[in-house]
Image 1: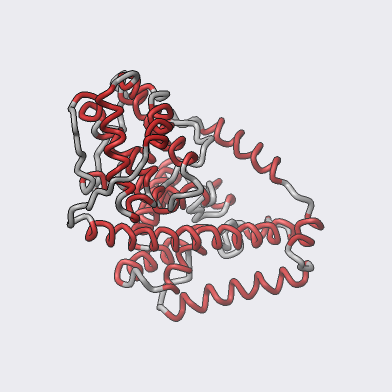
Image 2: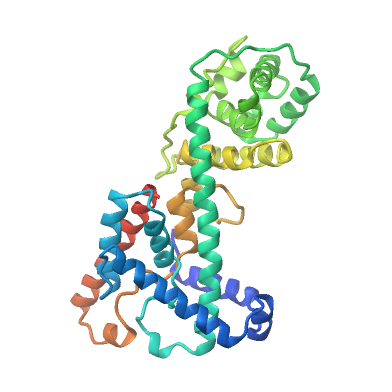
Length: 349
């Protein structure tokens, strides 16, 4: 269950751990207070200039967001619109004028630095996702043709992967299982015979073992349909039946271990893209587990993890205090709906 008090406590502790004195922060960025103020003004001018360019309302955050959503749906590849989206979703007070009168100069400076770092992080993430999506489409085309299996020596690798995988609960029946050992070696032969598949071996091994566990353990000479592991696999992630959540945890650990084992030889970004986007297992982790590991995530989850906890803050503290209970509920529902719409829009980026 989501515990608001605990999340606030955790957030405060995280911020305390990350705190850097202002002088040191300025020194790290090689800027003076005056220069940061100038850059902040440049950010604001650029932001509102782009809003005007695309005829996006700037009177309030709600109007800006809904106008922007409409534009992005029509022009998903427009870099200006993507930039506006990232600015809004990483704004800790530089652009949103709500409660601006109570922020100090130091808070403004810190908010500027924080936003710039997050925009850079998100832009890098979106670029990686775009590159991985292109690789994914190319791989699907490539897999329409049969793999020419080569006679490659992989006994040592097969032994290594066998001992790594049997440590995980859902694969305990594979211990001392000769059928599993033979099928695992065959899987590695197929994967190593194609350079593209070989580069995403952590995901391929994980997906086959997670999706075809029984076949790998019981059917002799089992050859999995590798095209199938690059199709979406549904999981029942909303309810624990006493077994499925434990298995999901074990599968997550397997992928993480494979990812670490092949870190120097694999296209990890592409592996992570496939892991996060071809099943809801990643989303299950962020919904139900304490996220203390960097499990790969989809775009909207990435944005959700770094956006301000208060988004979308559409009224000042003074305005909230003057609302009746019914009015407060109405605004709360409007904010929730807007947040959901903005996160859904991330799929277009």
